[in-house]
Length: 445
Image 1 (cartoon, rainbow, N blue to C red):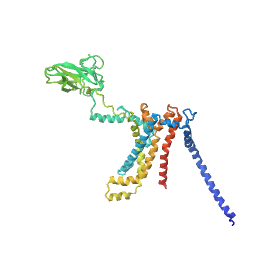
Image 2: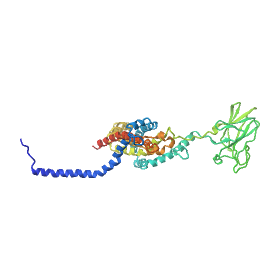
Image 3: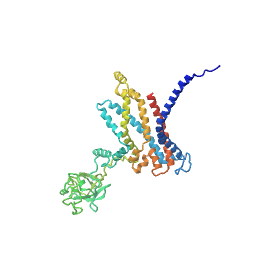
Image 4: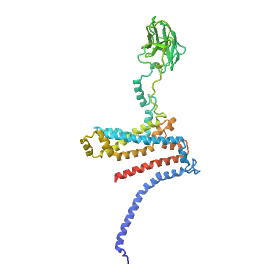
């Protein structure tokens, strides 16, 4: 049985089509070649080189196999970086996705939604370097520099006023004995005595505005009187332990009168520092200036301390990325069929029920993409951690990216272990990237 061969005219018609197809493919390869070369130089080659380098020691001369990978999980600092990275992956994307969802829903309810979105999205225009510097200053513990602690201290002092004279101390060699932490006491005094209690350590410009020249009230037979004053004469001069004309009283100081160790009276000094305990019986009394007058003021929250450094940096990250999350979720929210929402309202569903049972399920694909994108991003976070964390607590804040830098170039000089850390970071990021790419393809299909 013979097989028919194509006619010459048919072969002639097929060949030009094949040649045209080959030309198109060749042209496509030529156009893609620069991009492929860049991809190979900037992505493929570094990945392959890092994998190979991770199998050698710090010098790069001796093959150690999986030794660097074993060493990663023996090093306490690296284990801490892995733990911090896990905290970032669990906390930051979940918070950002939740906050973005709430803000996206709320912006649909306000008339100035565009301005609101613009304000929240503005931090995305700020680099992580600038954001880190901003929050490093905001987290300063000194309330005069750190805006957060300035607000915290202001609220605390409004509820629990600070001691009036935290730096004051009794004049050495005077009538008072003790210390600021335990309080000061006098010796035994009898009614009719006028006691002057000299203090130093208070800057004249730190005195309350109503402070008047010090003056002790006139003695009375059944009273203990006296004055608490700043024993300092501007411009030098004056006598230690006695009230001079230019010396100011210390108003608002609490003074206690004790008899046999029991408090029998409490007084507060006036603008001139004077106090009086009237109606005292016969016998000896002791005056005490309690330690509460000298307690150090509330210093605020140690945001940059070991306990709070990671949450503080995550807070800065939330500030930068909240707008991103809100805008993406808002775009998904705009695509939700409005008739489903209106039908639920007609059926009597509350706004909370609509949000939980209609909005969130319909937004699930968008929420998943946002969450996974943020997971990929936080795995690579470096700038904020490096800039915000002070040197003494840098190890407490380290994540895999900063640990990789420190091990490789920041003093460790062990590119073998650093390459192993980079391979670990890649291995953690790639599954999330693959998941996200598949989600995008499904959405575009």
